[in-house]
Image (cartoon, rainbow, N blue to C red; front, side, top):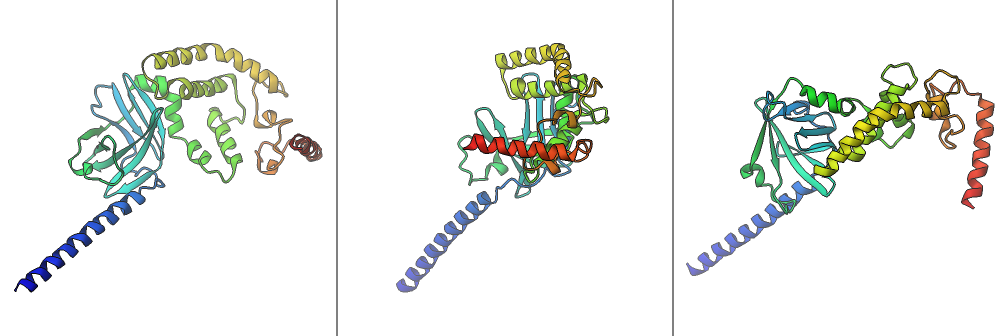
Length: 295
């Protein structure tokens, strides 16, 4: 009887040990699978807010980007996602580091759970008992935010970020950037379109994810840019406007600046007007100059 009892106890201990090992392996497996390679699910994409009528806070999610705006903070984020037990995990980058958030669509509402402080990357129990934020689906972005951040919101809805995240052909990124800036779709960039580009650059340089005084300085720079950059745009156009159209095209921008390695694939729709013989001589000269600089 004693022998049988000891045998049973040994089996229980082995079972418990196997259970612990299985649990650890399963936990590590979940953590290992937290690779961000998917787009945000369609039912999560859209405009969300804790109170759509208040117009003081909005959470915008597109295919591979998200943007949070409230009275004291604005942040734009690029991230793929990963599925964890029905939750959509994504990483939000801040100036001081990165944070993980988990989203779930539930009955036309968006649930959000954040990881606890000092999260070990293994324990996902907070998805069950953690504090949950709830957002409602909104029909539109608050008008004030649309006016202030319209360019950034349009950037979210474009294909520019997705195309430029693909490193296989940098020319596609440059072409897509030009197309995004070319609001009038005339294959030329005007003063207004270049000023719009400057506002986007200023946003990411001085406003995005900045707090308090830094953010106030950023908005001041943003406003100043809107006032003075039209003049600077005219100067910029004056340096490249070879056909005196008061605009610039990709062909004009790349005159004397043709890439030596991939020029045949760069801007093929805009480069047709250049003489092939001149291009060949230019590339030979650039290759010669490159060999001198590298030696």
